Image (cartoon, rainbow, N blue to C red; front, side):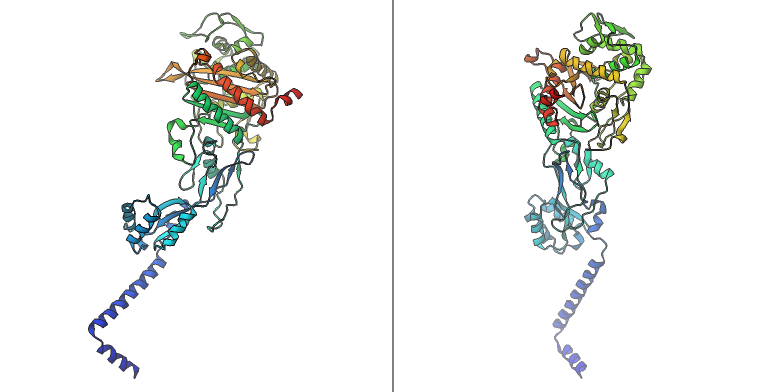
Length: 545
């Protein structure tokens, strides 16, 4: 009986009401189908590529546990344009939260029909709460940690940086991606922390900061265009500090792309000048062809293959081997190298790692520029550091082997990192040669070109170097680079300091001279005076020994 009554009632209903009822039924059916489609649509947020989902990075700390890099909780806003119901409402709401967003750009993204579009990356929780409170369909939040470097530019060339997707771009950050298993966040809830152990570097932030400040002052004082500094533990190859100026703030990684922000210690390649005389002298003594009593006539230029090799402010007399070292005689070094021969010189430099790229945890490294054709002129000039260009870290590694007892050790930026795997060669020179080189480096500080490095009662040894820069294929008489390698304490070497100044100017107080002894040497003395006590090398401990 009910069915006929219902039928009769519906038939008695006006046509417009029946039409409206049918319309509402169709609308609700369409909405129901759309909801089902949303549930089955594969274009979910994960379609944004699993690689872009941030993975937790371990903290980076210095050798004393001081924080250098950390991951903080942040969020990113993304849209699924096909799921946005009201485009105008979405644009208006997001522009209200983020004043820097372009409404026209947002509208273009939201009407594109795509399944995914980034709106804003790495926002703090407070802004994420504002987005969440808008309640916009098709607008979502993703937990996406952000990397911060609390010390700004300190050790920037060692740390490197990460991109917006939390991937390492350079330095230790890139090494982390290449060698360590990244841990997926255990939760996206507030306060969730990654369980990865911190990466402990060999860098000492105190030393790093002091060296950087001294170099900044040196750049200003001497009008240099750049500078660099290194502290290396010669007993195990650990890098205690690496400074390269100009530097950059890894919190703004785009600055690192500027051409003058390179890591000058491991990427820059330079003719190291008289620093190489320590290597040549060590080989000369090692072969037995020369002794500390050998003499060299440097009264006139040496003619080699049509070239004339002369000394800078030469003594113009016969020099002993120690005098040749402390007065930095090009002529004497060339004579030694020519007597030794190109084959033995090449072999020795190869043993000291001067012919191949130094591979550390930092991927940014340059291969040396080695002469393709080795003539007598090449042999003579390489002996005093011209004609071959290496990275400063490479030359420091070689000098460290000459003073540490003969062990060639690949440098590392990790604390307590296994030595055996990095020990490239043992006994590259005999103990007697090691002692002779130490004595010559000490004599150079007492009476030679490195006199301004004296830091008594701590006994310092060192070797200066000045090289003319190559400009458009020729050596410039106006632009030089200066180097100084200082070793402390020289009687029982522990730390090697390397200071570089690029294009320093002569000053009235330096009598117009711009060679290493007038700039790189005194700067290094100041650095050592401040840093050595922090490293446990104090006057009272030296005297007690």
